[in-house]
Image (cartoon, rainbow, N blue to C red; front, top):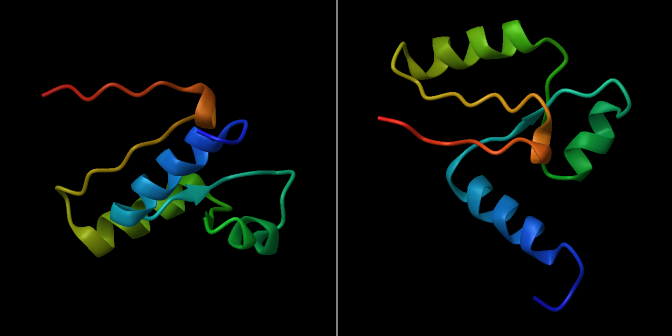
Length: 76
């Protein structure tokens, strides 16, 4: 990696090739979130309900309460 934290951007890009990423933030406007190529989320419960409605009851949704500070593990 040639730049500081470049790996984080590359991982983000890989994720966004396969999934929509929503951001809930009190400190950013919807426009700022969209400029970062994310989708804004103002109500977590409503967003999850809308995604379940769109993709069905077997939808896979991941919530990372601390964003990149959270390490998610997939279990089967």
